[in-house]
Length: 284
Image (cartoon, rainbow, N blue to C red; front, side, top):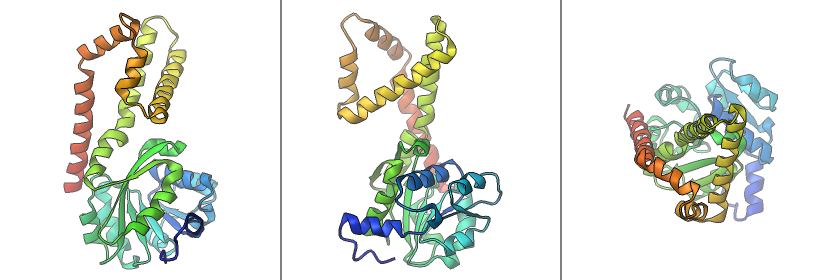
C-alpha cells in the first residue's frame, strides 16, 4: 500500500475506497466497525471479509454483503487492513497462525484490551505496521468513542488513514498507549456504568409512581439529551450542571443525595478498577 502520494482529502478518500478490509473475529465490536464503514460508503462491503471459528455471528455480516470465512489466513491473504477482534487471550494463537502471511503492505489493527503494542510486534514479522485501538459498543450506531495508538513502524500516514477509515464510527482520537487502558475504563466499560445509572434513574421514577416502560424511555432520552449537550456545546459538566440547578430547587436536593451516596468516588473507582483490569489482561 503506497501512501506517499496521498497528500489531500480527495486522494485519501480514493485510497480508502480501494482498501481491502478484514476482520478476524465476528463479535459486536467487529460488526459495529464494519457497519459504520459500510454505512458511510467509504468502503464497499464487497471489499470486506470476516472470519470466525463458528457460523454463529457470520450471517449478519453476510447480510450486509461482506464475505465470510472460517479461515483467518484467508482474511490476511485478501486484506490490506486486518482488524484483530478476538479476546485478549486468543491473540498469541491467532498471530501465530497468521504471521507468516503478514507483510509490510498490511496494517494490523488490534482491538484486544490490555494487549500492548510491544506484545503485538513481538508476535508479528519485523517492521509490521501495527496500530492498537479501543472502540466501544455505541460504534454499532456510529456514535462510538475510539482511541488509537501507533506502533514503532506505523507512521503518521497509516494513523491518518485509519482515523479517516474509522471516523464514521464516532469520535476517533489518537494518543500515547497508556491512554488506551484508561479509555477502556472510561468509555469501553463506561457504557455499562451509564446503563446502571439509567436503570437507577428509571427505578427512582417507578418508585414515585411512573410506569416502568415510560420511565425507561424517559431515562434513555434524558441521558441522550444530556450527552449531546455536553458534546455539542463544549461546556464543562460543571457549567451545564449549574445551569440546571436553581437555589433551593429540586435538582440541588437530588444532587445532595447523590453526594451523600458517594457517587463521585464510586464512579472514579469503577473507571480505575476497569483500567487496572485492562492492564492485568495485557500482562497475562
